[in-house]
Image 1: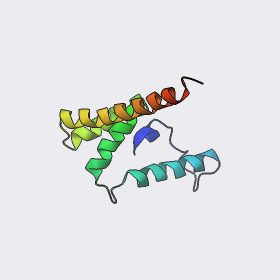
Image 2: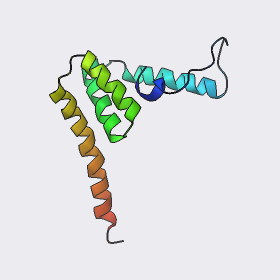
Image 3: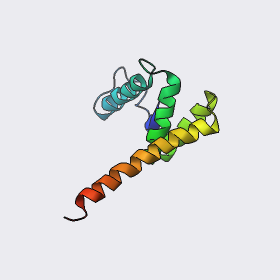
Length: 105
């Protein structure tokens, strides 16, 4: 299961079809699974993207999981660092632009 879905409690078992918030949670987990599955981008590329996004979102549980998965896929430390720095660069740039646009307001 991708990203923080592992940290979210599972929908109650034993019911034929979840309802209410359990149904929303189940559908969101299905979405996360579909989004992280290889389609136009291969699994290796998506793993690098997941690292970058985990860094930029500062999601510790996500980052730990994606680092573990990347190492299982054979990522080198340099590749992991490069993906992480993409997240760092995007996290910093929008903040800088926002400040530049608004510092004289």
